[in-house]
Length: 424
Image 1 (cartoon, rainbow, N blue to C red):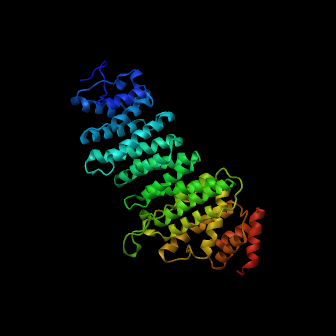
Image 2: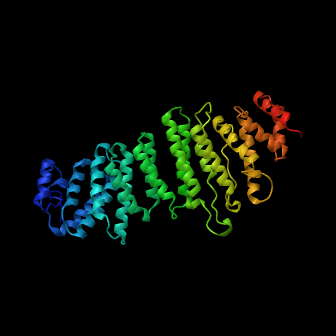
Image 3: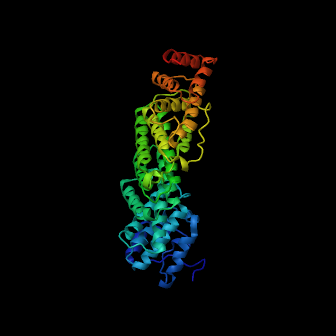
């Protein structure tokens, strides 16, 4: 049994000892790094120590992870190797959020070797499943902590870990993918960002993924598109196109948002409130709005998908409050008014879908137009409002009369323009 003055690690071959000498491990202190023979019967205790030492493993720096990598390469029995892989994945997960960035590459290399040993193995027992999930989450968190550790080889290893873990995906795995995407976006690391979104789309397009997670990912894509739209550069335009493309695909194809059953009875409501709140949050610091067709497309498809949802499954929508962000108000009004006027989003009475547009969307759009004082109102927007007034859309004429009496020059100008074009 172990005690404080006895070694913990077992090295069985001259090859490993030679490799350890090359990395100067023999000169480093600490029971965890001692290189002496350990009785075979004590392997389980060694593995337990790896699983339970936790975040304190970080005090050994990269050395312990290089050592474990060498152990994984030793030709040992299949069962022993499997147990070792399980233990090192738990150890990597325990330090993944606290390890120093300089040590991330060493842990990723260890996980790559561990993954190679698991490739093609049958995975039916709980320990094997846990190993694959823990290893994948650890890999994701480590790269999120240090995007600089991302290389083509780590990308391949990460995707192999993900492919093994996806059938057993957990909320924690999804959160780790989002964490990686957020970190890569902040670091402007395009390579790892592409990989992160490839994994996120794979999760959201899986029939086992629930609506809540898909909504969270959609909000993330919408926010990233809005953030890029606030910057005037070629790089920002490319970023906006990237996030818009991801958003559109998930909005149209994610199974958790699609119909399941005859007659569309089981359509899940599109998470419109979550998406709009994410967009408004990113536009909150923008004083002037810049036309951005990509962001407008995100809002338009959100409105259309929301309207297509089954109204009997939808709670009363809580629209983002108007008057707090003029850039958002102008965007919302600009996109929604033509959709309402063209009846791509119905506003008249029956059927039930139309009631949703009449009862919730139209007043919210008019509020947004009024809150922004109809500034930057295009001819298309004015024509759309004129159509709504001409067809008697509920509240449209009353709102127009209010603008006619308004002290706002912009609102008064829009009201008189529409009056000149519509016979009431």
